[in-house]
Amino acid sequence: NKANAWSALFAEPVSELVQRYTASVGFDQRLWAADIQGSLAHAEMLHAQGLISAQDWADIQRGMAQIREEIASGQFEWKLALEDVHLNLEARLTELVGQAGKRLHTGRSRNDQVATDVRLWLRGEIDGLLTLLTQLQAVLVERAEANAEVVMPGFTHLQVAQPVTLGHHLLAYVEMFARDHERLSDVRRRVNRLPLGAAALAGTPYPLDRERVARTLGMDGVCQNSLDAVSDRDFAIEFTAAASLAMVHISRLSEELVLWMSQNFGFVTLPDRFCTGSSIMPQKKNPDVPELARGKTGRVVGHLMGLITLMKGQPLAYNKDNQEDKEPLFDTVDTLRDTLRIFVDMMAGLQARPENLRAAAQRGHATATDLADYLVREKGIPFRDAHETVAHAVRLASERGLELAALSLEDLQAIEPRIGADVFGPLSLEGSLAARKVLGGTAPEQVRAQVARHKARLAG
Ligand code: ARG
Image (cartoon, rainbow, N blue to C red; front, side, top):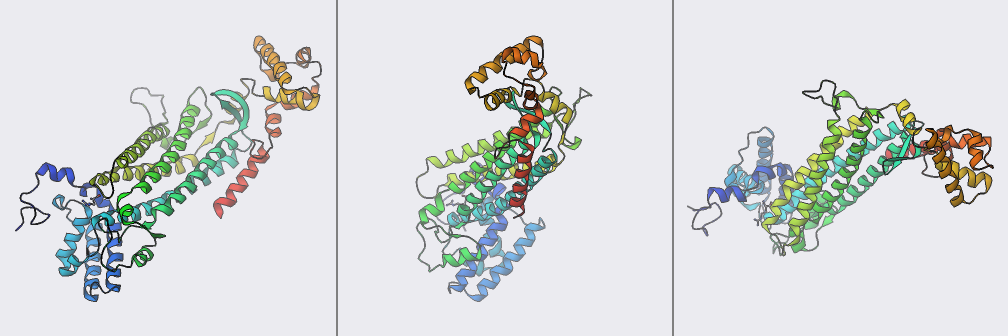
């Protein structure tokens, strides 16, 4: 009889606190399905290589099937004394099928096992996130199309800069989420490689067929160096970096939604089910969901910092430090997944308030650049001089308490005699928009072209 769950080597049991401190089963049990999948692929290969009998392989399959049912139905008894998901499942397997359960760990270590489990689990989660990112893009493209002609002020420094369309503005986010999708797909290729066969750190003397296991698990290849296979978590770090960027994009969108829903902007509304009220101020309808998404971005970026710091001082190969990779990684996935799901639903309900958007674009001399461009294009005036001329016109308008576009032709001609009556086209919001038909510009025809391109891309 052993004084310690590990082996006869240990003279005394660990204290209750140490047990709790070192155990991960409280959180890593969510890897159970990946752990079973990895174990079955390993056992199938052990059998194919003649390392375990057909009977053992059959017993392992039977035992794992039962464990799967026990966990799925909430019957499985997780034991803290068994430290982590791996030892819990292996112990139960042995309880159920005896000898075969004890043979499963042949040529394997928890070090290559856990690295495999995390990769398998993350691969599945990435696939779900990719789908959500595609859905979010599709929703934004649809909203952009509906608002392809809705004029609003474009900002720099949050000061009115030039007119844009709401459709164009929304499509900027589509570009961002398309790159997030690209980044996650790229990370997936490096996540989807097999550590199993590296064993504890040095490889194993058993003639394992690693390529076979990789094929069974649908992986793109095997990790080529056993020390690296069990010890690096760069795949988790780069996933979290990609997730952080996606959250940062959502956070920027959230910040805009919060501003846009403020009474001082009044640009858009969101369905009530994404807002909450106040317990004291009866009139309030707060954009809680975008605010929380903005806040949760800090949490995900924090996980990125946590994971990258976790790695930096570790000598090769495996160190228990790596057990700390799970909670930040899990929480990153949960946070990004829930946020994307909510945004897919919420953005579909985004409604513009076109009159307010237009009114805001009419303040701040938004077409001043168009006047300068008019002087350059129609009158051959050098741009720098045109810029100066328009500054005088803006100043005059401000002194009169008017918008630039509201100055009379006489006023404008007093500043620059070459200005003609044809200036009011360029000075109008629609004129300004229509002129910006360069590829990627805000002209409604360009916005529609972008919409068409995205639709084709997202369908393909
Ligand atoms: N629970 C451990 C982890 O999450 C599994 C690997 C443990 N290996 C070890 N040699 N203690 O990393």
